[in-house]
Length: 401
Image (cartoon, rainbow, N blue to C red; front, side, top):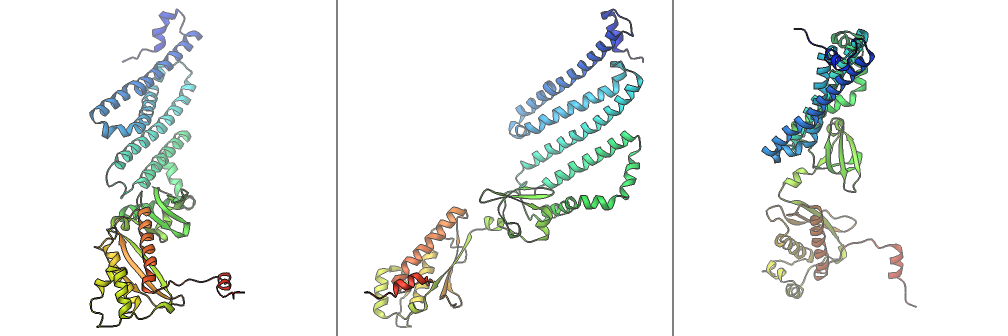
């Protein structure tokens, strides 16, 4: 069936010959306006109506896709208009055949690029839907999304180059074998990052929101992005550290996720006691100590069975205090123990777990426990060891005039 050219419909209206410059310019201008009108109708009317319909049906599930759908609509409109131009260019426009040949190559290249961006938008939509799932943080796919986009644009680049040089895509692919070494060198980090990302996702080593500590890179904070090439960590001082993804696999790092998912956060602090303050307690001292601290009286029922040292009574009191503390998790291990003596004194270690794992509350509990233990030490006749500066030592030993 013969297709009527647009210029034939305009000739009676303009009253000019088929070779008139006015007819050529009017036809081309009208054809361009038609394509722009189609682009506007799809971009500003058709797809927004579809989006509104889906949003009205389930706004909680579709509303968060608005940015991705907006990009998708623009790129979809470009693909449709490019297809219309390729299919009907000779029925809409007036130009020499040589110019049509050039426009045909350019439009086909533009179509390939537009389809590449359209597929990239689809990948973004799939990623946005996945990010709303409850398991998205534990199994991130950001690296896979980046790999998918990379493959899409590599294929598009091969097709555009083959179109420009008028060769089959296999002709270009056959040349990749000669530059494979260069390609591996250029994309070394990308390839290593891809393998590392797969291992991270498969083994659940890392996820967005995890608190990690990587001493080699000075990173100590929350993971904000797990990408193909880099892992971004927002440190607690609000700086951002960028770590190569493959370094997460090749080097060691500490992930605090297990602590956050456990029943408590460990408190492990040691107080060094001065050896000169350690001694046995007499019966009168035990009685006075029991009156000052009622908890001690319940600990020492039979004072005739053994001679109690102030360190032994202090350890039992501190352990009872920790187990009775409402913010210490009694279901976890809780003890007060002595470590090996050192040149700085006898270490007495407090070992327990905080119920509240949040940083501020954890530090406050740890400080409160240490404050209490340090303030009750004088009741037991104990002194913490501390290094006295030379200036303070001179003051203490200065003779009165």
